[in-house]
Length: 74
Length: 160
Image (cartoon, rainbow over all chains, first blue to last red; front, side, top):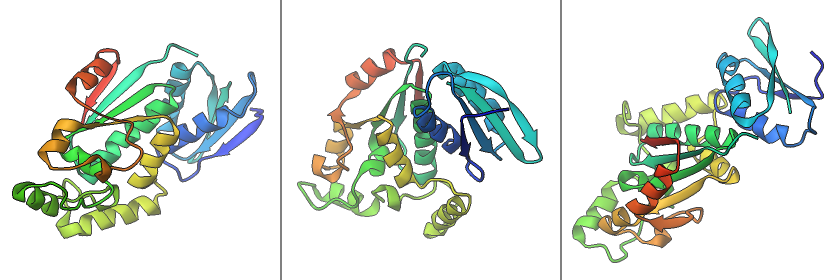
């Protein structure tokens, strides 16, 4: 999936990927897509929940081995 | 944005593990756009103390309690397996290894995210503490009515 910005959260655990996503999304323009790369399994459930609460759009995820890429549209 | 939900967390415990849990939820909630208030009472006051308090106006019992109690975010014990501080040290080194933020970093992060800190005046009086014993980040010194006022308007209320 194409993204405007990538946030590397490899090696970080809850709550840091979500906290960093929240900080990063502020720097994006409306409609832009943020890619978050994580190896914390929890993000698969946490990111949709975060999007649901904050009103950003969860576009989906791609999983390769331990690496999970999640996509959020501001 | 959706409507702004609120969270209150009563931090009653003064142990490292419980404080970490409280700040994990506080930081996540703030990241989710929720308004967060943390109400520190009883042993939980240790989390937001600068360190050991001085003699101040304490009576003997309060002074002894202050001497025996660990105060300050960097000094807290684990609620289990503390083993004279070795457990706490091991936990901190594990957290570092897994790049998890320390309690002190979690507190700073919470402030950056606008989390409100309220300290309970009754507990402060009971333990012979003074406002000056607390970190500057404390927004207000208040009582149960303040907590209940906040809690009754919040959808998530936790007691840790």
